[in-house]
Image 1: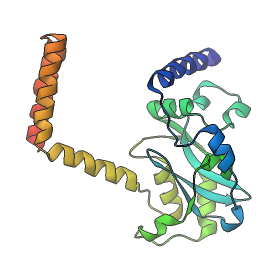
Image 2 (image 1 turned 180 degrees about the vertical axis):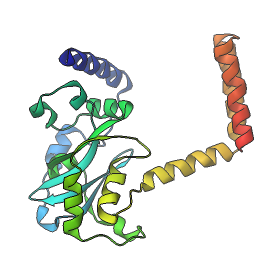
Image 3 (image 1 turned 90 degrees about the horizontal axis):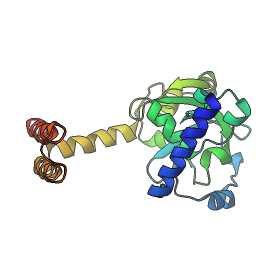
Image 4 (image 1 turned 30 degrees about the vertical axis):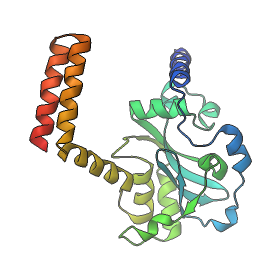
Length: 228
């Protein structure tokens, strides 16, 4: 049954990615293979590693011996008990479904699989975090204790929360803070009220007058106006 559900979900996502030409990462498989050679001698056990992506930054804790602990949204452990399959690199399809269903795991991968061909920054967050980093060995041990299944939230419990908790003792996400600030700016900008009114009128003209079009056209501009 799990296999059937996985096959159906995989098929549907294949069609979605094909139609949308969706690329979560900024490198192709060929590019990642060409760039997947890293000098791990410059990493120390307990270091915080950052990999900038197209839409976000991915974080992990270096455990030594070419191993990185990092949180990844992943639907596969829910659908399959095949550990050999789960250990493979998390694909875009598995990742997106994990985000939508809010399931993830703290897993240990090689540096190459963790970075996926991207550049790696070492302890870059130390400059902007108020708390001093914990001793590297303590950081690594905290990360190792958290390996396994965990709830996931794109805003409130992501890979950045995981690494900041391990290294600084406090789960924080600067990416979440930045996103929330942008949302606040949009809500406070009264031009967003005008845009929502115009979109509401357009939906009524295209789809006709009805509860599904009229109510959002009234409630959304009203909410934005009261919040601005």
